[in-house]
Every structure is written in C-alpha cells, then in structure tokens.
Image 1 (cartoon, rainbow, N blue to C red):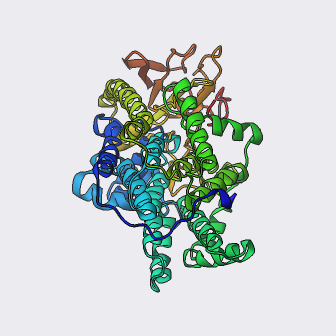
Image 2 (cartoon, rainbow, N blue to C red):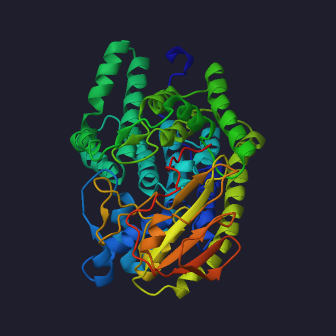
Image 3 (cartoon, one colour):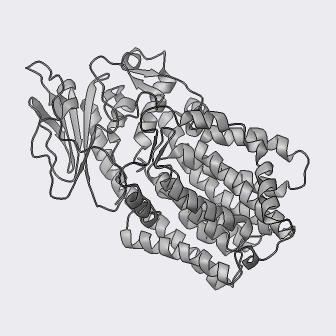
Length: 514
C-alpha cells in the first residue's frame, strides 16, 4: 500500500493565501451552535455543569455538602474539569462552561489547519472536508474532555512534524503527552497512533525495511509513554469499566453507520459514505498522504477492536470512528481549482447550519422548561424522568436537563454522573442512591412512560418530567404545579411511608444510537 503514496520532502511553507483565511473563517463558523444558543444542546453538558458546581462549591456550601461528596482522582479524563477553575472564577460557572464549548470546535478547526500546513505548507481540500467532522457525535453528546484533548492532539502532532530533527523534541513531548493524557486518555492514544504511523511511513519511504520502520517508529513514541501505567489502572475501576456491551458486532456496525449522527439521518449517512469514499478515491489517484492515512486506517481498526466501555467511559470505540474519518479526509493531498475547493466546504456548511437551527429551537424550548426551577426551593430533592424513543435519529438533547436543578437550586437529583468507582462526584445523601441513568426511559415507539412506580419520585420533593408524550400514569401524591408542551413539574406529597425500593419500569440504559 505504501507504494501508492507519493513521496514527501520538507514542505516549503507558502504564504497564507486566501484558502488559509477561508479555513480559519470556517473554524470560527464551527462555534455558531454554542454562540447562538442560551442552552447548549449537548446531552451530557448539564451533568458536567452540576459536577463542576459541586466541585467548585465543595466545603463552602453546606446544602451541597450534605448531598454530595467529591473525590479528586488524577486520571486521564480531566481536561474541562481543570479548565473550568479559572474560567468560572473569572466569568461564573455557566459562562465559563460556554467558553469551553466555544473553544473546542474553534481549536479543532484551527488544529486541522495546523496539521496540513505542517505536512504540506498550505491548506488544501483535505482541511475543508475534515471541517465537516468537527461536530461529531462525541461533541454533540458532550464528551468535552475527549474533544478538548483531540483538538490539542492536532496541534501537538503538527508540532511533532515541525520539530523533526530537533534534539529537544523527545524531552518536550514528555510533558505534552502527559497534558493531553490528563485531558483524556483516548486523545493521548490518538496522538500515539498518529506519531507512530507518521514515523513508520516516513522511515519506510526513506528506504528502511518494513520491520525496521515499525521498530524505530515504536521507539519514536517513547516520550509519550509516561501515562501508560495509570491508563492501565484506569481500566480496572469498577464492574463494567472494560466491556464490549451487548451485541458488540451489531453495535460496531451501528457506530460506523452513525459516525456523524446529528439531526437528519439521510444527510448524516450520506456524509459518512462521501467521507469514506473520498480518501479511497484519493488513494487510487495517488493523492493520499501516507503520513496521515496510516493513522486513519489504524484508528479505524482500533474502533473495531477497542471495547465500548474503557476506563469508566462509554463509547470508547464509537468516538474513534469519527476521528478515523477526520484523519482520512485530512490525508487527501490535493489543491483543486477554486470552484472545487469551495464545494469541499459544502458538507461542513450544510451540517453546521442544520445543527445551529436545531440547537436554537431546542434551546428556546429548554428555556421554557427551566422556568420550572423558579418553583423549586434551594436544597430540594428533584427526581427527573426523561423519555427517549428508541430508533429516533437525532441525538436526544434533554437527557440531563434535570441537572440544572443542582446548578441553579443546589438540589439533589438523580441524573448526575455519580457512579462509585467511576466518577469523582459521589452521592452521600441517606436513602438516595440514584444517579445516571436512573432518569432514562428508553422505550420503543409503541411503549409509553408509566411513572407510577418511578422509584426516585417516592423519595423526592419534586418530580420533573420531559417527554414527547405525557406519561400514562403518575406517582401517588404527585400534583402538577408547572407545565409546558413537553414537560411538567409536580410537587410530591408522601402520606404513606416511603417505598423501600419500588419495582421500576425503567428500561436499562443502553445508549447505542440506532
């Protein structure tokens, strides 16, 4: 396969032409969804806010301290958690969170530009196409630490290329690798794959045997090895931390089909097909840069091998699929006429328009929904229930809206990330053992939510519900005090002793997209 790639020398960096500035503009356009909406429509984002709120208020907020504990653990999943400290101190928690959300797509877009300029000295069609993968499901679902680490990986790899031949490169990349690992261990793994593939291809093209190229490429990654031990230990945290989940082979196929899942199924699947076909076409026309293409191939293979649950995180394999597609597109070494370059930006512009419009609509609905918190006193216990219909294409944005009760009212809620042995946030309120995904009803289209046996409601002061359809049954003692089109808030009255553990109709949470 290597013979199909052209040979490359040291790139002669061209002046920053119009396409460089066009790509920079596209990177800023990628920030429109969070910039133009009051409530970011990332599924996990409110739960991140709630964790940060407890983390920042620890020791100074008696109400939160009575409900939650926070156990700091230095691990490969702390990027946004560390960044929120200075940002919240300067701008407040929710504004600080929005700044991180704006930074991630912007840095990712600029990172793509940096990689192509480091490799080829200019911006070509690969960068413009790869922009269409910035808003991948990993970012849309709110995997903030991973997507932040991925943006930094692109800059780190570009720096690796630019510092080739420098004696100090190995020493400098020891802390760089550690910083990226602290952001997220999967991002650190992506950097290792990219460096290995780059060095392996470079050495082989330079005339080394295949075995020698592989061996020397492995040694080249030694400066990145420092976090290996804590990464291995992270996979042993809690039951299920290393798991392929149910129907693993089916899930792998679904993850490829939904690699760019957003709002419109036909558009998203067509985009995946186009983005997979273009690097293949570039390979046969000898327009594919092997220094990146091999890393794209390796990540695609890893997405098939890596388990779904790794180190306490979900979708460890799924998130790699979009990265493989991104690097495959960035591998295309071609600078076509201006008209074709403009067409290459089309998929990104269409996708960002669809995403932004959907976010604005959902954000307005969420703003109405969150007004219910005006009726919730500080320190209340709020049971949140959320209907998700299996098979619907758009990524559901409201799975953790109940976490705003923690952020705005210091409430005890059941939808935060607080699994012992996995998350730093811990629930310590007596008699309350509920955390994500206890809020989630995953149902088929013919099924309906029945809240009569919703266990958290019987230990809560309020029941907060969101769903496209009203529930067919309510818990005993629930009185609705606030309602919008798809949500209601009910005050709970408990004339009888609290149920010990009522049998719930919640379907076990399996977040595989359909």
